[in-house]
Amino acid sequence: MSVFARRQDNKNLAMDPIAPLRDFVIAMTTLVSNNLQEDAVLSEGTPLLERLIKSNSWLPDFCATPHPDFYQQFLLHGDPLERFSVVSFVWGPGQKSPIHDHGVWGLIGMLKGMEIAQSYQRLPNGALVTDGKEQRLQPGQIESISPQRGDIHHVRNALEKEPSISIHVYGGNIGAIRRHVYDPTTGASKSFVSGYSSDLVPNLWDRSGVRNQIQHQEG
Ligand code: FE
View (cartoon, rainbow, N blue to C red):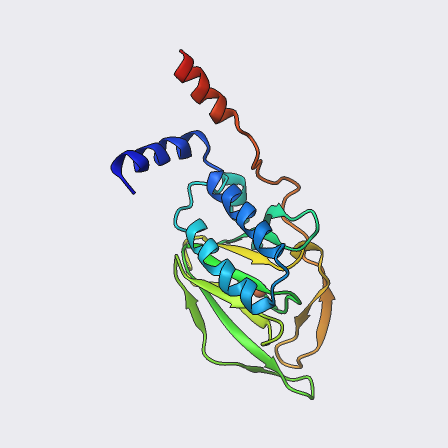
């Protein structure tokens, strides 16, 4: 990219800070419209999410604010046909999730801070056993979740004194999907629906920056 093109890009971003999220939503909408197999959605969605998490300036403050007691899941975009959703997951210092499943494919992109995830397998008798080692997710890294491969895990903020934020894409309206949490000792499952931490979503479609540009050009 030329210096001029980069300068122009930065100028456009300053006037339209939500553009990276809008571009991602547009690309994901195209991707899920192709009716691909789950593996193809995950592999083709990965570079899209990598591009989105290169910066965090597009994430509105209200979707990046931790709660003192609970981790937060803010809806960034819900596909109108509920084929996918995009959320920001905001961990306060030291916060952790219970062991849970998802029921749909997912991509997790680490935006800020660090997360530690541990996968589990469920044995035929219902007991849970750890599946592999803990995974550390650093900014810029992507992790995928697939119910076909097993999608039970727990996640925690690796940082004891700082918040961490990751951006997740799921193959459905994740806040409305009936899922399960698991008792770590007995493996017993309980149904839950996560919902979202706010009624608000970012406005992807405010093009007033474009209007300012016209006013500037036409003096
Ligand atoms: Fe999860």
